[in-house]
Amino acid sequence: MHCQSESRSYYSSSSCGGGGGNVSSEPMETVLRLASGSAVVVFSVSTCCMCHAVKRLFSGMGVSPTVYEIDHDPKGKEIEKALTRLLGGNSAVPVVFIGGKLIGAMDRVMASHINGTLVPLLKEAGALWL
Image (cartoon, rainbow, N blue to C red; front, side):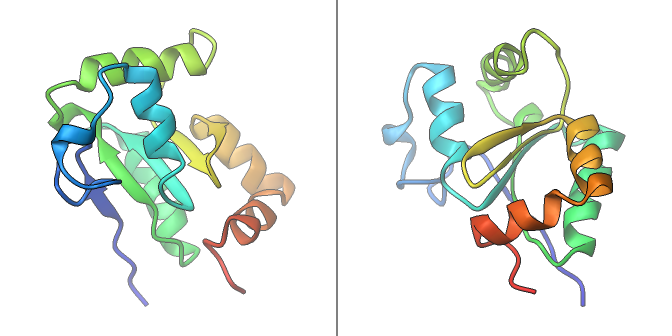
């Protein structure tokens, strides 16, 4: 079974809550709103190999995350700065949220996967039913 991630720009009409007029001018508020809009949200850069790897990890598990490609967004730099603040000053993509909660970058996602806590998080968020 092949699952495809859903990529969005937070300005698109399909984005959480409708059209671009609903977008907050504050990047941190925007990040938090988008992060809580789906069971699994990945903030990504389209050319990033680690972003691709985390999307493939979720796809291989049968999870279809909502993906925001920040390099395709006119406000992507501000969103990236807000994500960096959330990560405590570490600038890294992908940034993953599960159930509206910050998981972190690729290292944290992989650590959760290896130690067995990722699947329960995905189940609790409603992203995985098995």
